[in-house]
Image (cartoon, rainbow over all chains, first blue to last red):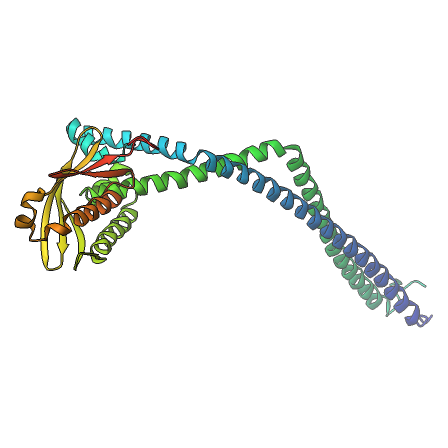
Length: 108
Length: 231
């Protein structure tokens, strides 16, 4: 018995239909992924804005504090620095009167 | 219709085409699902990140404040060190010693030293008119003292200076009015202006702005400022 002639048209329709379904599914997934990425970008942008706001606020606070206390802080730092220098000079064998003279102009 | 019939000569080709189509579909869906999952992970991560930030705002703020405070302190210390380095360099401390004493990079101290040398040369190179002649100063340090070199026109006078004690920062020896002309070759009528110039310039440049000066009969005394209204 001879084999019947296959239904090429039906076969092509089957294959095309399966591919179209897959493409539709892939496009749906692509759109969902795009929506998620967009939302993620928005959330990250919110987080960045929030960070910047806090950073700026805290920086301004620290700068205001420094501006108000600049002289005191500078004096304290200078005093501490000069004491460290004096200690090093002492350690190097310099006499006290010479150390005082060397650093004299720095004292307020 | 059964395209899988083993007796059908087309069956094998159909099966092969069908399998190829299925593989292509699998690939398409696999790629799409992976991209979808990746995007979902991205969104989840972003949500977690925002949530964590919102839950730790105080901690984050404290961290920012502390970091910035440290930056500001570092900057202030750098400026304080620069000021002290300038003064030590003016007091004849070598750049190498200054770098070691202040724990500063050699390169930075060398730059400051160049700037100090430049400002000294600039100070010397910018004369003022005293009487009918141009006058300018140079400094020559040698440890505990040195010379202030006062140029007036073509005349050059060297006045010895040394560190003072107590409230007196620096003492500059000058000729008395009586011996002024003989010692300096500068007319007596210009003495007051010359001494005023030396005192003002030395106080500003060598006293770090923390001093004022008093002209006495045989000395200019640079005095430490004790505070507003207390000199």
